[in-house]
Length: 379
Ligand SMILES: CC(C)(COP(=O)(O)OP(=O)(O)OC[C@H]1O[C@@H](n2cnc3c(N)ncnc32)[C@H](O)[C@@H]1OP(=O)(O)O)[C@@H](O)C(=O)NCCC(=O)NCCS
Image 1: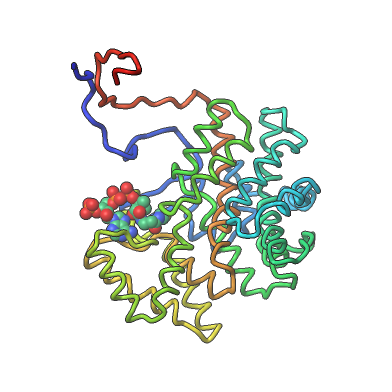
Image 2: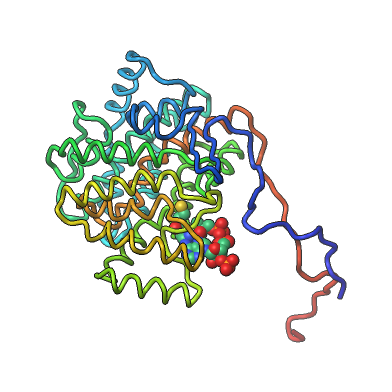
């Protein structure tokens, strides 16, 4: 049997491969810098709202007052789900993971979108805004339906982060929690050519529609090596219960060659700058709630993973204890990531449409050659 003539093996996981030219986001993994459209993440978190950040990601410009007002009005107008989508959510088994519910609802919304048959730049701009408004509505509505409560309508007086908390809990959220949610959404809004964004761009590059691309991106985000890690972090902390148990568990996992959720990153070779913000948030929320146990337990695990595997925490590590302290159910942690990241996905999808070529890499064939079929009773 002859062997395939193959090219030298490339690094697995497309490490270091440049898949597109992009003006959306710059990451310096050595210096630990994250930049959206030319602006440092610290500047954005301190001075912008999530809505302004989304506008920046889509257009490359900071909105002026009128542009922000227009965007807010468009978000308000879009934050209503057709009855057919509520019916879809209602029909799902109660035990459905909210990421699966969100993915299903976004796919269904693609059949209902007023621009469903158009892929023009203008229709893509409108779809990006609609999707960004609909994500928090879907997540909150599904959570209420599975808890035998009716969905609560979006309140046009509130921002998107405040609306999410309001639609989830049915009461006006405390200002501090809104500020934390706003900052968390900004931090998670975009991150270059990560797995879900790449998925979205691959789908968009076939000139398929934005809802298909975002549905695919949701499927990629939910995996435990990507956005699913924040839920896994909190499950690990809760399972351990005490710092002593957590330290032992993490040492045992590392000795067994297992990965610790919330640590490591393909691009960052230093402390993930997003983790630094979330670390502060987790600490402050713990102090405000009079319960710093989960924050402190998290802190104690960092030197252990650093000592044994030289891995820093990533964005998912401290978001876990921060969201838990805010009283958010564990399986909504990854959907919150999605509520933010849809802004980045839709920015990338629009960029892909503007300068498109189908994304079609090749593989390194390592199978046999020269085989001949034999009749079925001789196999
Ligand atoms: C993020 C992640 C997928 C990056 O993967 P990657 O770039 O392919 O890195 P690798 O899996 O090749 O890791 C390189 C080495 O570091 C180790 N490593 C990576 N992340 C680790 C972790 N979280 N815990 C322990 N060891 C880890 C690997 O086991 C490997 O060790 P080895 O060389 O001895 O085999 C990976 O770090 C991971 O699985 N982290 C946990 C899940 C997570 O938090 N995901 C969210 C990312 S934002």
